[in-house]
Image 1 (tube, rainbow, N blue to C red):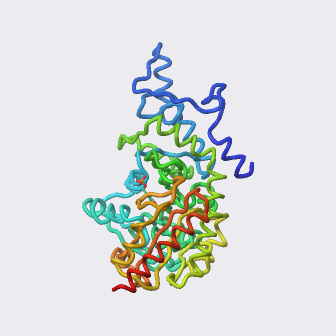
Image 2 (spheres, rainbow, N blue to C red):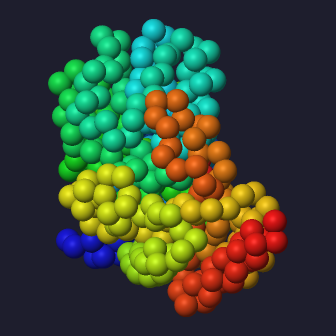
Image 3 (tube, rainbow, N blue to C red):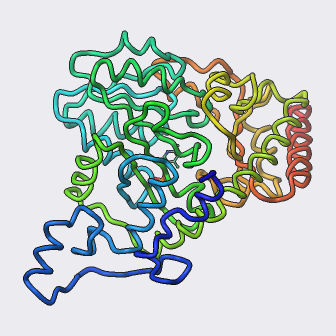
Length: 393
Ligand SMILES: *Cc1c(COP(=O)(O)O)cnc(C)c1O
């Protein structure tokens, strides 16, 4: 099946849909059995998509888990109430006190905070590494390195990683390769074809696609699936069937949405690249983006999220740019149908293994499904406000 056909069909098996098009919302805490035999059967098969107790999921969760494994690959998918919960629980499923992990320096900020606070407290050591390190990661692997965490492209700064290169070295040293694949969205990057063992997504973003549900997923190869699944259960992780229904509805348009996000974002990024105010465009499809060669080699497309660096500007000027926007709203998340903008004045401060090459403010955009000409006009007026403020200072 080709990608778009897969997206339409993912998880819609007749055992879950029972004759209607969409897997219904099945709400449950208690599951009731009529005989000892049925109860025993459910208990024995409780990890294998059999109704057992609400916390183990219902047909709505089973359908969504199937949908995610069909999109991402792997042997199974564990569900969490947010992308952050998926990241932290997937890591905790595999590390113990005394272990060491390698974390990419461009990781999503809460991932980093989890390492610096929770992992530290339980005696798991974190070393941050250069997102562009590739096979050079070998020098950082210690005898107790359990897991290497990647995020590609990186949050805010967008470096694309050599995932297969890192995975090859990791596996030579028996390290688990875990990837935050939120940007790939289960469509533009196939984690398990590139050596990943566990692929995590903030389904909150493009899977849900409408900015109205928090949801996380972690999909694993056969080797790691059972440990991931059972640890998720031990930690009491469960998700609402109503949210899963919305996420599954989101999946149906994932292909067309991503294509439109991609086309509009490329158009806006090309326009930005011509502007005097812009020093560089950090979009994985542009050669100016670090790791662009890995994007070309490993990804099948891009989406609406990218950053750019101004070549001049200070807080007041950037505030003037941001404050008068009509279509771009300020917000931390992304992946919905709406355009978003945020400024980051402290990218470098977050890093410990590398330094960020640019000093001027960085702006991250999520290009939504509005007409791209309206978005460009909005940005053009924003640059006017930026320039006016700078000229008056
Ligand atoms: C948003 C995001 C997360 C966290 O997802 P939540 O559902 O907001 O907890 C994790 N990783 C990346 C790359 C994200 O953009």
